[in-house]
Amino acid sequence: MRRAIAFLSDYGHADEFVGVCKAVMLGVAPELQIIDITHDLPAHDVRAGALALVRAVQYLPDATVVLAVVDPGVATDRRLVAVETEAGILLGPDNGLLAPAVAMLGGARRVVAITSEDHRLPAPGPTFAGRDVLAPAAAHLATGTPMGDLGADVDPSGLVPGLVGLPQLVDGGAIQAEVWWVDRFGNCQLNVGPDELIEAGASPQGMLEVRMGTRAKSARWVHAYAEAKPSELVLLIDSYGMVALALDRRSAAAEFALQAGSPVTILPPGTSTPNPDLGNPDFGNPNAGNQST
Image (cartoon, rainbow, N blue to C red; front, side):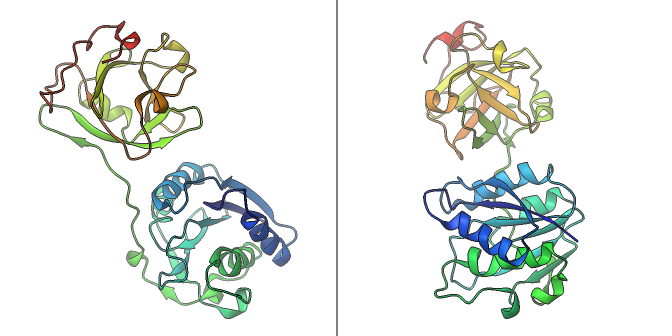
């Protein structure tokens, strides 16, 4: 018997949407615990939702039901699905939102399309599937309803994949990356792990060149945010094991006009430049973080 539902959405808190979905779930199962992962995702941003979900699911208690709603295709013919993994069940639209988290949890064991009329609310309109379909279905699953009661099985290989960018190692040794996530402190998580930096020739406490749009900066690979000198751009390994760009007690995103999806190129020492028109005289200068290029 499952008793916890983890809830993620792009509903925000200005409207009643989150509260109503919780009320629906508790109406089915008053004893439920509901874990709010986040509801402040950018509206309609499936990619951001998928990345937030994959960051979170590894820390959820076993057997948690996950309800994820970022659904720009609501009221169209896109499927709503429940996906069983080794660790729990995830529900949401089949639009790539669930796929990275499912992979993180070891892959799909079983997938059903949620079509049962007996496990949903009567809908005055078709545009609030989170309230009318997904919330009651999640609550029923959390209280022991078999997945098969929600609808027919579908082929797990037919799930829409998550569209998240992967880094590319280009000729000359540069890493073409992108910003995956900007946290509330303005730290910019990249789609690069420490092993990829090391394979490209970088080393902890060493200097790298970072190119962001038309700007190029020297950056140092540090262990902690507080190691950064005033105004010095640094790279470090964040709490999820990914490389992040940061300034100490300042927003790197605001300083360098970065947002999720922004391209970033990293050049470890000795790599050739993929853009010879963008020179950086500060590279290798440990005091260059105080200068603007």
